[in-house]
Length: 182
Image (cartoon, rainbow, N blue to C red):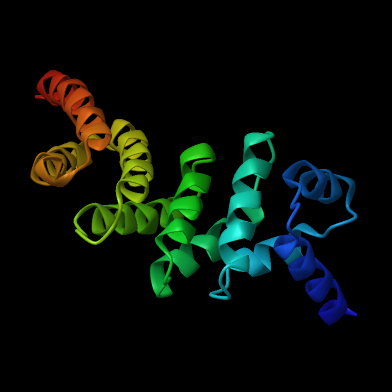
């Protein structure tokens, strides 16, 4: 029975006329199990895993929570080689929308974000979500500010125009925060 649900879900993802609103409505009504969507999102089965991560992002934008899956998602990010950067971007988007509440998860996520910022193979979209997450945590944990500022200064010359503008604005704000704390 589980195999049949999974196969049906995979078929929905690959339809030419994929309908995000329909899929979200089915999750909200219970017709489509969130566990199924999340298990595919937390897999390396491309492109379905990336599409499922995208669905979860939209699910979060509707005000829902994935707190139950938080640890599993961060473990997946932290320990799995994800071949498509779009998959990483969507998963980081989850945590830009809904910040982890568990301190252990927060620390691992912060570490992961710092690694992605300093990885020159990562595209701007991944880095911008990592920046959003680190901005949130550096406000909560001011001891992160010096490292965050240094990393932003280091990567700024290599970012796209949009990414660089985001960094410049953020650096002004973070530098003011750092001076207030000193």
